[in-house]
Image 1 (cartoon, helix red, strand yellow):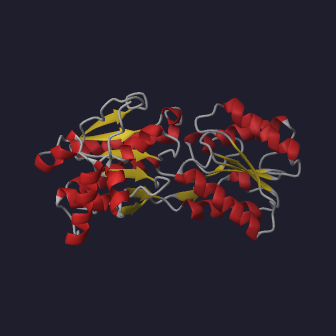
Image 2: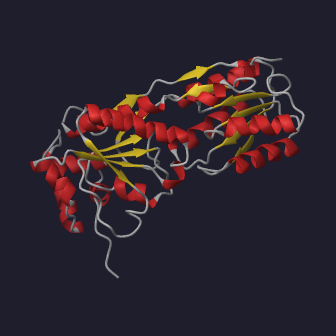
Image 3: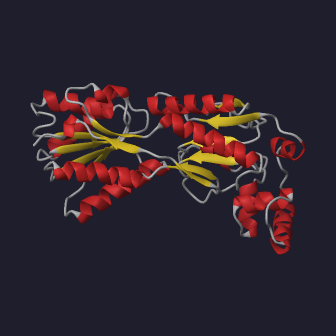
Length: 330
């Protein structure tokens, strides 16, 4: 069995520096001290590290192409599709091509595509393809942070502030037992959402009721989760819905159970969609600005590739709560 080739992450760990620092040291870029440069070069020599061909091309000329990775589980989620559309629009404006990197392409030992940099949308902690891409000696931008110690350029929103605003809004309308239908804590967004919900409940002396379903689950899974909550905690008087599309399913389950949405039970969504504005009653939700998110990811990656931004630059993504009638009762 052949030994796994060393990556830039391995070199960084051996030298005791960040991935971007190790990359800059080996490329001769950035503000890297001579001591650090020598340590990184020594670590690379000890590990037998060799930059991939795409990384070497950056020192001579660019391919004019960037990679974009979206896990298969997320291709069924409208939010991520809208993010991809926003990225493609911005790529056209910046005159770069986009190669979509699928999970199947890199699931085996296939070589990564020749690109100047890579965007990972909400990288999953348990996605081996994301792990492999994050180890490349290439400029990397992630939408929300990669779990672990990967150092990348980041586009990130204030999800804590938005979720607290939703929960405060539910409480102001009389909710004392809000339940949370959550996405799993395998992304930065999923992890932060669960943490802020538990923290908010603790601050208000409320026992948290949290049930999660995997990314990309179907409507039946969300309906089952809502029924599970109602059976275990019939006193539930509000639902905070995390997964895209789950709020409409939860509202249907509540109606079937004889509950009146916007009256004796409230519903709020962490991911807005056009449909939520036209349900009866409309559902309060967070506009995560997916197209803007995709565009910002491309803008930041292009700036990093062109040396106009630092490799670990962070760009804020403005989001907002859209208050609607489903939480205006009581």
